[in-house]
Image 1 (cartoon, rainbow, N blue to C red):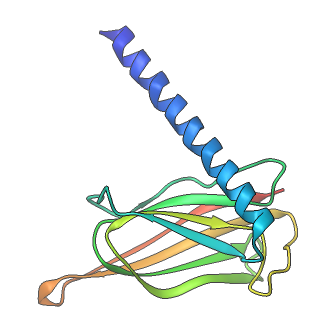
Image 2: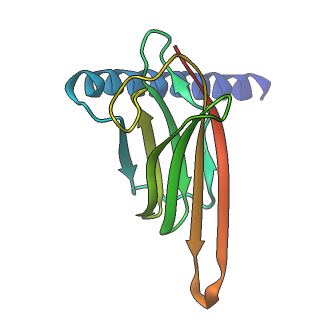
Length: 149
């Protein structure tokens, strides 16, 4: 029984590592082929039951950083990058309508003018509002830290 639990935990760690490496490979290819400063990829095959954001994934030799956002239903979403001293902010997108989905958010380490920003600690902040029938609103705000090499 304990061995099964340990085996399952190891499988989950391997899957997480594999998905992080895959994200890094895809992002590295995108970074070399685009002048964009961020990208989004949606997976609507799995609809989550609640909002969540994963810890930021990074590649130590690349300025590309990413995270995964879970959105349970059609929502209005905004995403910002703020540096550690809270002086500079980069708007990735504001008030976009997202379907219920899993969303990969990738930041290429550039500002809105597509200029590579300095190395350092950054925060990725996501705000979402889910509107339901009967004027019920669910507000979600989360952040994850990103260390840009």
